[in-house]
Length: 118
Image 1 (cartoon, one colour):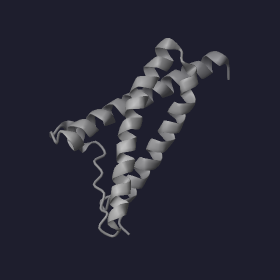
Image 2: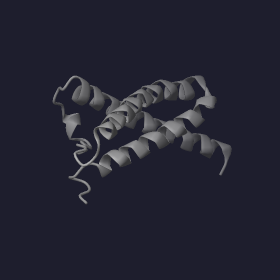
Image 3: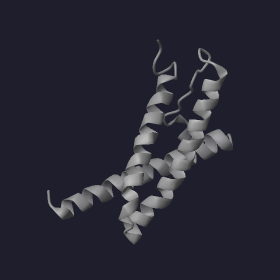
Image 4: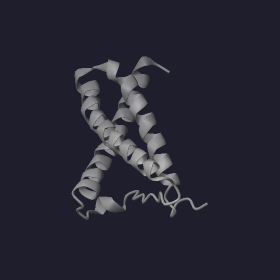
């Protein structure tokens, strides 16, 4: 794989992550903070059920949700810096942030009885 192909693949990956993060960030704001019904609410609407777990676990997961919101803000700011200003040292933080978000979303899906029922 040539250097140009790698750069193009990285740009496409970053643009996809940027679009996904921006849409999910808007969904978080409209659904969770402002409680405004929008068409975004139907996109991957996960309703966690923590009734089987202790109260501290629900607070811990809420804290992780807050961290994911902040991670999305970081991604929305950092990706344009990488693409426009060529700040390539942020890429490793973007990869770590994306890994965190994927794990968080998978864990949230596990606690949605509509998706997984044990």
